[in-house]
Image (cartoon, rainbow, N blue to C red; front, side, top):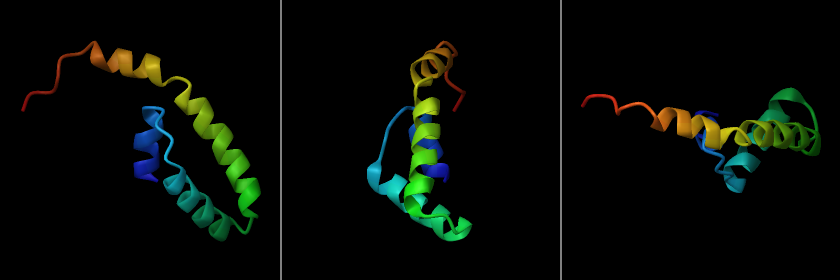
Length: 66
């Protein structure tokens, strides 16, 4: 989930990772994989759509000191 969140924050879609998450969520929830996929896909698209603005905002700040 953390890896998926990190990827989608930057609007990077990784089908194998998303398939793994869908499978695990379907198993845990008892829902069929297609229903889980449809909901997750919509959510990821919504989050990813704001990536350019988020990344531009982050880039406006100096890097964290080493």
